[in-house]
Image (cartoon, rainbow, N blue to C red; front, top):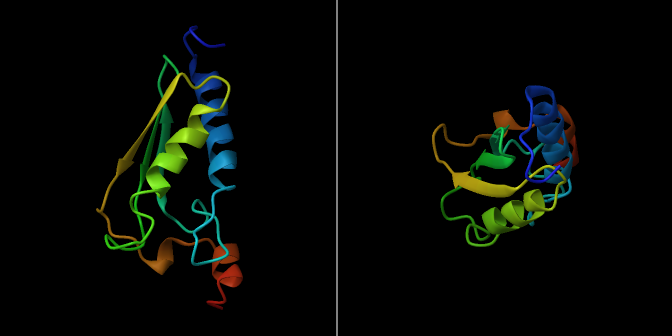
Length: 111
């Protein structure tokens, strides 16, 4: 698929694969993956197969601020159909525990 343009259906399927991969990356301080933790704000794949992931961290002083975004980018690049990947670290809106899924809150002991 590399080199060929993605139609809308294939882009959506690739975005779903990216979410699956993001669910394999865990926050080092909580037993919760970064997607269910609510750190991922958006996942987009364009027609050329370039993936853009907007994400945040729990705080700007997060100890993995230097390593987590490059890890996300590297893992997304391994997905079939992705020709390149970029992670945009954003701070608005700020992350709060309300962004977590109910399952993540259970795993983190917040219920």
